[in-house]
Length: 372
Image 1 (cartoon, helix red, strand yellow):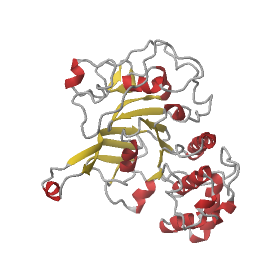
Image 2 (cartoon, one colour):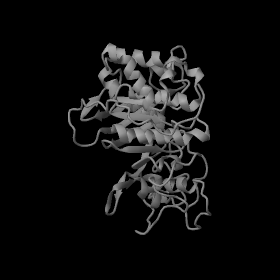
Image 3 (cartoon, helix red, strand yellow):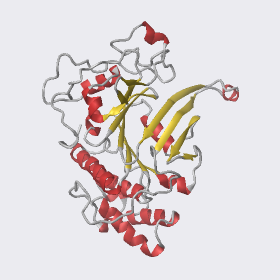
Image 4 (spheres, helix red, strand yellow):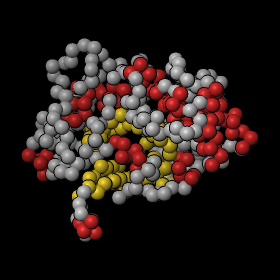
């Protein structure tokens, strides 16, 4: 089933939009408060019974809001806790603390009802391992639609055809198995499966990192087209700031289990306030030489999540760390006159009001994402 990768879904495909079973249609769609997720590490049986074993705190006190219809990027280095946070939001890993609300309604942290499962769907990093190799695409979609009673049985086949057309695949692909598709086509199948339940929030966890460079941009463009046509709310997780720029309205930066900066996309690229964000931006490949005044890329490796530094958790790699950073853990604080731009830094970077984006960068309406 390999073949050319279409960049966008065909026109004329009608599909139900996101489910609307929220208790309220005002305010943010998703509100996460004080989320904590930890994983026990090692220790003897006796130590476990005494609750003395070490805990790797993958998510350590995260507050997050996602507005209705927006695309929010969650970025950071590998191991920062992005995927664990995504799984906590979708109910795939239990919360140690905190609360997740969708449309004003609390989502249970453990086993969720079918209704709650439909409200938040996830597209995983590896499309091959996330698809059942023993079922055809049609078999997967038919089973999903019947179990969740999305459409009457008489309409399951036609609805499945609409789904695959929507993601740019031929209806004949319903008869094929995952192994018969290319990587990009398998990711399209995974997206179709997630959209089958008409979710209010679609979480895409590194959806292009396992794909060839030549098809990464087509999948991101597909997500952008689907968000616009279906009114989806999208959480896109990536470690590559260059990838998310053209697609997302806001960016949240994560480091060692916490969110340390959130801002509108163009504002964050033009004037980052946290040194970690500035370092990530400095590492983006450019077509032209960088400005000598720009901060250097982030150096060194992050500390172990088992031994998070006291005070500011970024201070061991920060080029401007001071004594205060060793003792006080900074909170997210809004920039003067810019309430939508918050950063957790005692000495946030300041940029002049005329600050512009890095050389060679353009706005999300002007370019396709970097394939890197």
